[in-house]
Amino acid sequence: MTKVQTAGETDEKGEGFLKSIAIDAVIFGFHDNQLKVLLIEYKGTGLFALPGGFIKTEEDLNNAALRVVSERIGLEDIFLEQFYVFGDYSRYNPAQFKIIMSANGAVPADDHWLLKRFISIGYYALVDFTRAKPTPAAIFDSCDWYDLNNMPPLIQDHTFIVKKALNSLRSNLDHKVVGLNLLPQDFTMGDLQKLYETILGKKLLRPAFQRKMLALGILERVAKKWTGGAHKAPYLYKFINETIDFSSKP
Amino acid sequence: MTKVQTAGETDEKGEGFLKSIAIDAVIFGFHDNQLKVLLIEYKGTGLFALPGGFIKTEEDLNNAALRVVSERIGLEDIFLEQFYVFGDYSRYNPAQFKIIMSANGAVPADDHWLLKRFISIGYYALVDFTRAKPTPAAIFDSCDWYDLNNMPPLIQDHTFIVKKALNSLRSNLDHKVVGLNLLPQDFTMGDLQKLYETILGKKLLRPAFQRKMLALGILERVAKKWTGGAHKAPYLYKFINETIDFSSKP
Image (cartoon, rainbow over all chains, first blue to last red; front, side):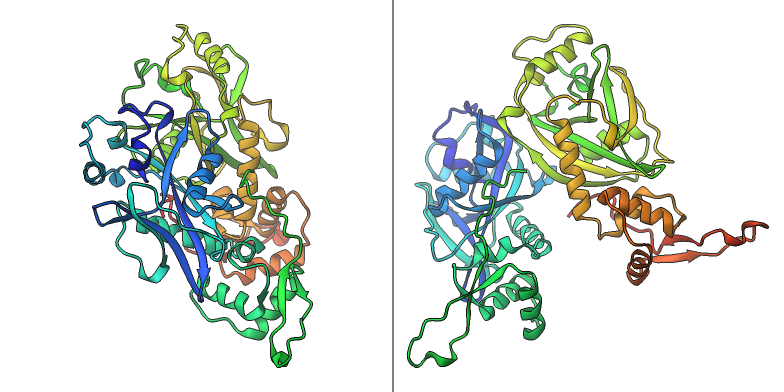
């Protein structure tokens, strides 16, 4: 939760926001055959976290999640899915947030709304790495992509939230939205296979993978350009019908 | 949300509960080849709703959901899954809750915590119909099973919540937990097929269904009892290893 991010905009009672509820966003990108996740670092603390935020009093929950993610990557057309609500009492750690808030100026009062217990609604986002522009807020030292296998320690239960998001992504892997949102518009069968292998964390057999993908009827071949020496360039594919529901609404 | 259920236990500020967050439970049972859902009726209003409740200040979210469901059906070992968070601003309807609360006694003040906007975390529960004991709270006129295809109109967006829960159940149908929790311990292949047909809302081919189910390796045949004339009684099956995670924790 980027609690501090909004702290400056509100009084200590959090006027204008729903209380007790936060959003945490696991933003996945795919690059160099690695699945990446966007992390922020709170200024002057060395503490890393997932991007997050709160819901305005008259704002739809899913729109709030879209706003939180858009602010960090500068895109509006984002595939977003709720995947789990994190609500164990043990995740409540006001001391850690007191450090974060204090490092950014005034020390908050003990009854500050941001130091109370929050339940966090987890969303994962799938974004085209090549189009996303990681954008820190004023109270961050950084906002960057990290390899899933090489993340710094995260505050609170954020490492667990990433793990849970990855599991949800894996069980939704049959849907073309995964490939559609993590790959550029045109890609090779090899690119697609590497994406699946990366998400699943295991090698797949090339012929079986290609057969299965083509059988789904969701890919079309992009006309090959004649490029001189590129006789052996692999076919490029794209997804048929790029209309998907970005709103994540039911 | 059975907002009124807890209203009597708290002051107007809702001391002891997290604000803005409710739980709504879609409790599925299976009986007479029908999928049933448990509904409550608020006393003196004719208004029907899903069972629901709130999270205590130091209570885990999933434990709160378990408590909410247990109180209505008198069982502790319940399969519970979060399936969606309902957070559109348009679902906010304080007038309806004012009617419900007023019908039960004192008219609530306009700034009563239960008349503020809530975001609701949807859980579905799968329970053995034969073991569940629907139990109304004092402020309900009734607490009963209804056929999914024959529900009364529900308050707020509760009909949509049921529909969304059913969709989630359908997409999780590969898991044995569905059969394990909706059927009695011993059942026939026909019982199992009817359960799947009911959830999916379509007929399945008997031989293919049986083959697929047996291939999963999750069923074992129960020794047939010799019952005189019952030469043609179908085989009974049960699920191998009934250990499942009732906590719904990750």
